[in-house]
Length: 386
Image 1 (cartoon, rainbow, N blue to C red):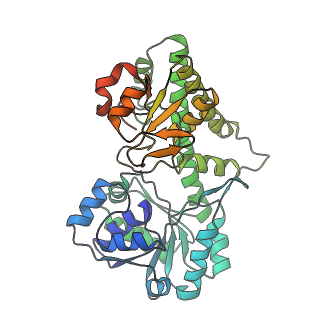
Image 2: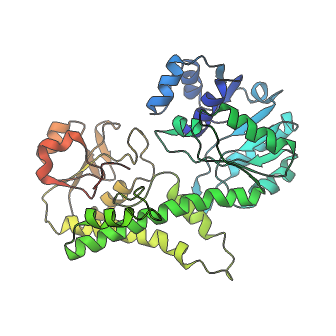
Image 3: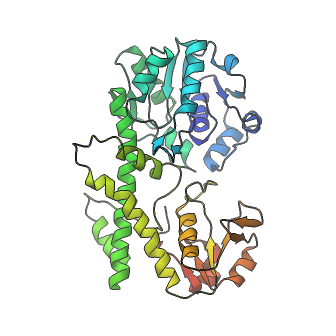
């Protein structure tokens, strides 16, 4: 398993319940943590499994030792968005695949990192890996092991044959869920499934945020609107809680990547509108907050998901910038960060001091820790979940 992030380590733990698994990572601290059975990121289920389950699992930074003789190699390394090109940066992934091709080209190799359409097929040729597949993950931060053990579907993209079947069976046998649908398809179709899945989720977030915009602007009960919509089984009552906008590591970059995949001759106005809608939502919320003329706004937490310790791409941080542009003084309470400054805002580690210093508290998600100051909390959280 190449990569000890939340995707790689969750997959490693799932598979190590039945197989010998070695995790490869260039971060020595992560290698040490995995060998000590400590999750390097927040995931309560994952840590409980590391604490109690009999796992055939170890970690190393020695690439040649890890890769030599491996029957299967899963690759889960970051493919961040390159701001200059607007495309996913696959250079690190290419480096890993080049190493695999040089050391163990006969292995069955599964890419779990998100990639542009067409990447897997071209990488197989570039690096001489005959059995290279794209196997998308559909995991939530903070729930990655649970989602690995209970997959909604298993998708394997690449050349049909024994390798694809073997990968699917490996994942099915490691899962706790039964009767999981399996889809074997071309690599490019699988790459598109991953990008389009996150794009649809982003679109759904944006839609319900626009419903909330309508309710806010016309003084309607947003909860009643959303419940009235959700009781239609074709719509459903999930992924419908208003927020300050979608963010995090995956949705924004995948939306931007999929926009570049359409040929100019193929209409995609809806997809093009998703990022714009999200940007307008954050600005609308900033203006609504500024309109209350607060002396000091306190932003409560930057993390995007309950149970997660990751605030990359946080919509709350985007909101901070918009508030500053409107001349609003902002302080931040994020227990994961030490005292200091962030984006020109003072970090206030003491929750008591934070509550006392600001006259309006902005929270993407409500929290029991704010019950005593509920009268000065601004949040669009209607249902108490992500």
